[in-house]
Image (cartoon, rainbow, N blue to C red; front, side):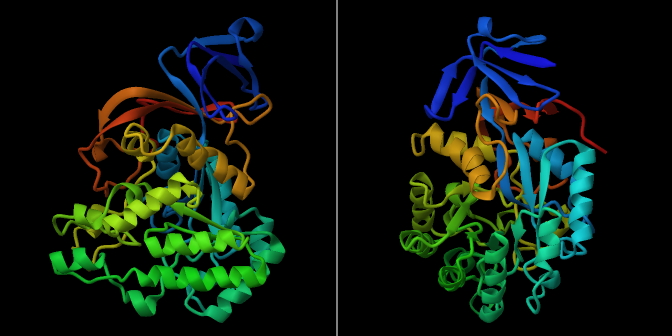
Amino acid sequence: MRIRWDGGRVWDSGLGDFIEASVAYDTETGDIVAIGHPSAIRADEVRSIRGLCVLPGFVDVHVHLRDPGLTHKETLASGLQAAAAGGFTQVACMPNTKPPIARAEIAEDIIRRGREIGKAEVHPIACLTVDQEGEALADYEALARVGVLGFSDDGRGVQDGGLMRDALTKLAALGKPAMIHAEDESISRGGALHERAAARLGTTAQPGSAEAAMIARDILLAEETGAHLHVCHVSREASVALVRFGKSRGIRVTAEVTPHHLLLSERDIHRADANWKVNPPLASEEDRRACLAAFADGTLDVIATDHAPHHPDEKARGMDEAPFGMVGLEIAFALLYTGLVREGLVPMRRLVEAMSERPCRLFGLEGGQIRPGARADLVLVDLDRRWTIDPSAFYTKGRNTPFAGQSVVGKVVETIRAGRVIFREGEERLS
């Protein structure tokens, strides 16, 4: 069946702006079939979307879905529904589950169940080292054969430099990225907050050099091995400088930044509320501005939410004992559109590129653009709708966010993946 949307504004990737046009997609092939004047586009069903905008489906290469084994925090169903509610048509899930994604059959099971759930498409990321223990490499060949997106020990950095060099050598041969959580644990020592926030609130500190030191090491190893190094959740000015250095030398290094590291800094933490605890910690205002500048100019390639749901009891343990992490899938676009685009800090074309086009291009995924023949991964958004972030209304099981109660603009109304509706505003939560 061909469905045509009339009366809205459609994102034109080549132009980098919206155009007044109709867009039609085929529910059987899952492709976009035409963009243009409605009189020139045959359709079996026509729908008015006047007042709404059509964007390419968002892609998040860094989420935690907690399934298998940690389903009190999130299930695959709740996480993928939350992703679809946030406009994400594809997500890549990190391997720190129980058991970790260190064996091919675990990755295959996640892919199979994701298809059965029928929400956002899920791409597992497998462990760099067996069970994230940092002692031996996982079976990359077997995991690559079942279709994992990349390899990471996210939540932990690989502390042994020689082992990381071996990993990058193997991944270069396979053509798969190493997606690093950059943290030298001999420096971080389990610290909870940025140095100034830790001193203010009487908790443990994590020096920023813990992140930068590992990025420096791994960029040099990537240059030596020819591997694709993807740096997760960059948060410090020194880290930005290192990524720039790597790119300037032609090293295959890419990097992501989270909404919270672009919008918040340590000075926003006024009380010992563990919903503000994230790894890497919210950094200084100078670091935040450096990350924002690097995101605006493309040095930090993509947006990733690092969606990390936790049970409320876990976050109630206090700053030192609570786990790191915030949820972000359902609020990422609205936060960034409100805080960056509407404020004139980042153009809309850069936000769309970072959330749709570039992650697809860098990681070899379908989607990312609205053009005839492309996969019909579409997000219908009301860019004028103001709403208040209410964690009790989330589809994710996680409620851990410091953005609760914030007023934002930009609401996802509907999400389409491969020509099929995977989210409509107001739908019931999956069981």
